[in-house]
Length: 205
Image (cartoon, rainbow, N blue to C red):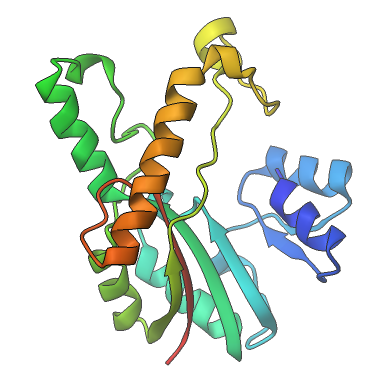
């Protein structure tokens, strides 16, 4: 809806976005006064080699054509530009699956978020994919968890407003604990099982 882009614009970036949903594109344009292309990236007719930074935050797990998306990003990215990509950690979800089986809670845990997420990445598989598309990793880290509001579970409606800590304290505390363990795993060079999300800064080879 334009929250991230509005923050970037507020920091001095000349920002514009691509949003396929007409309603969300309208909110971003009208409520945040942003320049929004209401289309998919491959149909947006953006100028080649025109952008210094491209951000794809919580996008890649939703697309069925990730390599096509990367190829289009490569086309519009300047040769010295960067792309910031955040995705859920497939290893973390696999760990949660094993834990839920151990605790006999598999039926009550929507571990893979299968209604929305069509692809799951690990550091290894993601780096392999970007390499095939002509990119290399500039930096990689475990980002601070973003806790989505859980209003729908309590009132039946989705709101963008932050839900009170008391309504979601267990999930917030556990995700922050796993985040810290994920940082330690990355520091020692082991397989990253505990970091809930992965953040890659990539550039052209």
